[in-house]
Image (tube, rainbow, N blue to C red; front, side, top):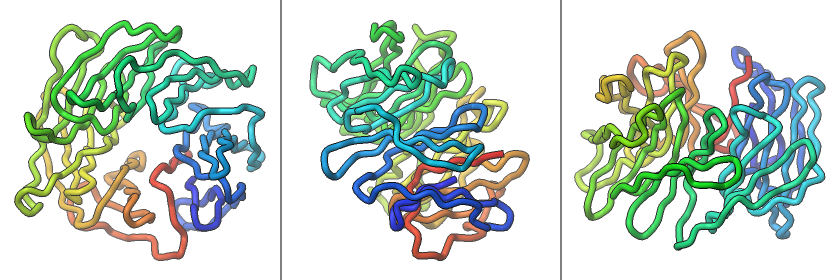
Length: 308
């Protein structure tokens, strides 16, 4: 399942054959910023920024293959995530960092909080009944645990600039890029030991010209939550990390910019998406360049979903 920005449509295609099963159009004034699917794979949500200032939350019924706009006014959706414990709830962050709860049953929104200082929310994740946020600000980065009432229950400040936050069972994976005081890497937080410092994995980029940032920006996590594949957007590479030992166990040079990675279950294959190229790459995680790259006039947004 993907979004084609060229035709303003949600595309549902058969993976092995590539045959398009359904193509659902939406208004040309809307630009989806995320694609989130419920755990039972019956519904998908697309928060959209409106060029006319009117933002929308689109829903796709994956049973009837229909798309519709929810009767819900939303702020600009810079970040969006469904609640892990309750798929009828979602959380949205504005570019300013203001955090909102969206009740998808009552079709209502509630402001949970606004940063006291200038900060940008660069990622949202949920685990159990908690919300986890990654923030970029003038001093570097901050990771926070927030209750459903908006109360901050834990936070950790570090020198790097976070680019995302990914929940993997009892761990948080926070890729970060460099500042004048730190290099690039990934911070691994153990939610069972939040008072301790995170394990930090330094990202090297041997295939990059000297001085060029790797820009770790996304992580795909294996089903057992023991292995993470870190996408380096500027470094055109993927690093494999053992989450239990916090060590790099493999480096894969892709040769083209990737923004997100999606693992194909029960295989060594993955699909990479690219903000730069707006296409899809089929990647063998055992090594080598991409096996295939889509060659169409479609402009695929970097957020896709693999459906069973």
